[in-house]
Image 1 (cartoon, rainbow, N blue to C red):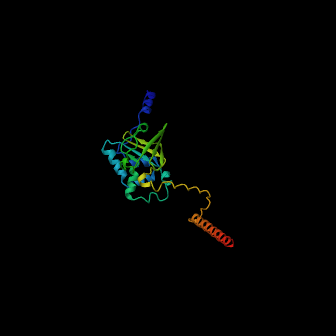
Image 2 (cartoon, rainbow, N blue to C red):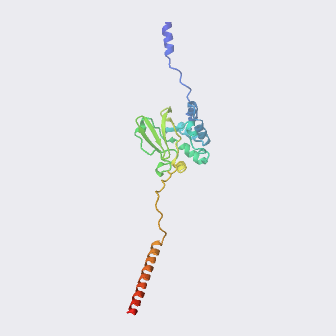
Image 3 (spheres, rainbow, N blue to C red):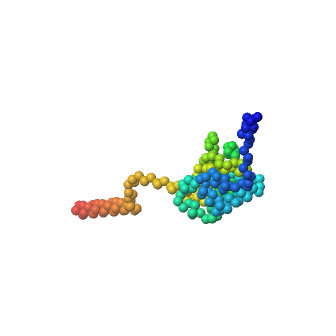
Length: 226
């Protein structure tokens, strides 16, 4: 009897955690290493927007989350140079307004529509490419790789990506690589100054006229002697 009671106690399922509203920043805080993204979400109030969407509708969301070292790899002053509105767009560019499982990346249609706006105008294009199990996210400025799944509950999925997704509209010009230096031209002989051919022709004509004149003088002198 004692053995049966003990076995039953061990086999019991642990009590579920207290239910509560979904909180994107709490999810990121629990995962760790997302301090910069959390700060951006809070300062732009996008975290409140995400939580409201999740807790007051059945709309799914996909969030791409760059860790702190991804932000550290950005060009110095890249974030500080953005206006408040541009920071909102940067955060929104990391949010897809529907739930995308890992397997759905294989068949999703490009470009993806983000919370930052319609990608059809070329301002916020986001494209997915896959190679086996690897998923790459291309922005037109850089390409990030989905590293792992941080959280998923069927309505919200959060993926860690190895780079900050840089929108073409915000970083296209600044992030474009500098043009390669042009190759030096081969040595080309200096061209004769303009008009040199004409001068040479004039000199030749003058010499011809002088020769004819001398010849006429000699003929006249010989005629007189005769």
